Amino acid sequence: MNVNSKITISKRVIVIILVALLALSAFNTYLIFERTTGPANSVALTYDFVISQDGKNYHLENMVTGSSTSISGDASSAINMALSKGNSVYLNTGNYNLKQDILVSNKMNTKIVGDDATIVGNGHKIVLSGDNFTSSEYATISGITIINGTIRIENSFGTTISKMIFENTSTGIELANTKSWSENTKIEDCRFINATDGIAFRTPVGNATGSYASSVIDRCFFNLRDNSIGINVEEAAQFSDSQVQDTRFWVGEDGVFNQTGILVNGSMDQTLLFGVVFESFTDVPNNMFALDIGQTCDPAPILDNGVNFLGNWTAMIHNPYSKWISGVGTAFEKENVNIPIGVNNQYGSNISIQTLPLTIYSFKPKIEVNNLAINEVITVRISLEFADNVFSNSVVRSFNSSQAIWLTDDEMMHLYPSQNIIWALIVNAKSSSSSSNAVITISGYGTAG
View 1 (cartoon, rainbow, N blue to C red):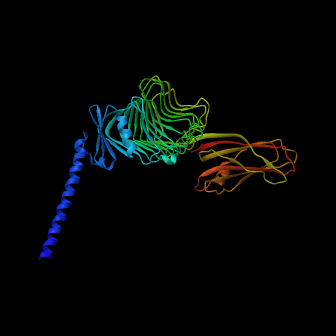
View 2: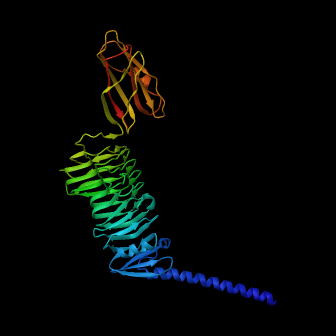
View 3: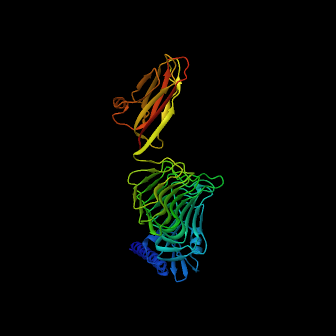
């Protein structure tokens, strides 16, 4: 009986201790939120620090220890302090006044997330940077309105910027390569209101590359003012292999002068514009362009499905340097492509006619042969190369005098596949003579996409 009594008492003691610990834990959580002037958001529990505004003061709460610090008048000091000690910061509803830049250097998986929070930047920046892209990866900034401030992504990989508003600022988001490169950036569900540059891909400096590749701008909206640019790709910047999709540019609501949706002085190689709408609200546009192709652009982006130009523009696509414009259903021509001639009835080297970065939808070729010798026979062979490295049947034409001919519809049908993607037109030629001064050229027109 005594043994059983001791066991029963021990069990009761354990139960009492457990209940006390649970109560203490609950009370500690209550105190954390009680000291916080913002709402008791359970999401904040997953962050290292919660910052709240209380008048001119900012309260910094350590969500692990429950300790609290109050900083007067300068939210940037509170945010910098939090990010020096942890990786994630949650901003409760309030106005956060910056007196200096927020610097996040060589950190992984940084999070700065707001609950209807507004950062008044006063021209300052939130800078995510690494000595190399491998030391600054997968940062997230979300749910914040930034007034007169900038997010700078520098030598960083996999950064996500989402559900943000950038208002009345020189630059909303800038990407910069100063030591390596910044790729796989996702900018989603953001709005840019009266920004001189909404998103800027900066010219690389030093030994850095220009690559901002494999990035996505998705479901973003740009309200432009005079002398402003929605997306600015500077010289030598490579915003390539990327997508701008389901995005809208509004011009002519605030002024009617010098407003550009996308300015390209760098590279947008293999970058698709998909579901992008450029909308002008003015009847008298003055230097207002949806897409402005600069002198150092190489190449321009590809205009895919759903790209629309609404309203009045000085030019929908301003292309003063006659750069190639690519898109779905792009019309193109090839003129006087020289074909080398093999002798002694041996075909010369292949010439590949392509429309990179696009693939050929259709092409109607013309063969022109001149300057044949007496009794010389020139034979020209044409075939198609498909995307799976398969070649079509060939069409062969022979010439014994100077002549220009177009391939017939029956010959084109002989070339075309039942279903495949045309990668290139392949042409070679031969002469019956041991030497030849003949000249063979291929010209033609078609569509690509």
